[in-house]
Amino acid sequence: MTIHINKLLTNGKAIFLAYDQGLEHGPSDLNMKNVDPNYILDIALEGHYNGVILQHGLAEKYYQDYYKDIPLIVKLNGQTSITKMEPISKKLCTVERAIKLGADAVGYTIYNGSENEDEMMAEFSKIVDTAHDYGLPAIIWAYPRGKFVPDPMNTNLLAYCARVAAELGADIVKIKYNGDFEGFKWVMKNAGRTKVVISGGSKLEPIEFLHKTHEVMQIGASGLAIGRNIWQHDKPFSLTKAIQAIIHHDKTVDEAKKFLE
Ligand code: FBP
Image (cartoon, rainbow, N blue to C red):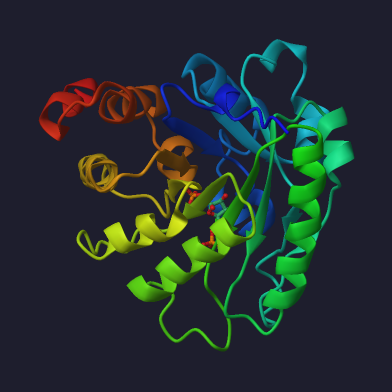
């Protein structure tokens, strides 16, 4: 079974542009400019991202031929932030539909520590099986959350989630960085052959974001899957170039920050 992961990587590294926040967080993340999916797809295309992450509806309406040079990652599950129930993210799209939409990979969130984690783990396990049959990589968003999770940024818990992603056959795991430089090496180690990309989080000062990027790359991350830090920024291309300098060209923060000037 050949899994076509190289389409998503540049020398083993990747920067993905995430744009499923409209579903996950709602319009409060968006403004008059970035509410338009074409604005995001243009950033992904012109910024040479390794992939863009969309839910199936936006993929169908906006991922036209013009954008086909950007690998598409279809997020297969999701939840809104309107309800406040125990976390569960259910499948909203099949692997087959994602392929029809042009997907090069599929993504799925697992909330380990939720009362509902068993449902998500079982659902992902079927997804990874189908995706791999078609040669598509499967990415887990590993977010510990729910009534059994007092501290979602606990290093051992993040390591556990990275391990679960590896155990379930994910090709890439997307996880939050908690700032524990030494401890996070254990998180990476637990991911084994599953590549680790770091989630962007809410908008930071660009320099702070470059430091975070540099730090996670030093620990051994394969890159980032980011959204708000890019498309809420008024100069998304300069920050993109600065991040690429660190991730794809091994530059220091001082060297990379020149792209911000
Ligand atoms: P950001 O870089 O904007 O944080 O996006 C990454 C992401 O994983 C999105 O794919 C997803 O919509 C969101 O974060 C989920 O965030 P939350 O932690 O609030 O569930």
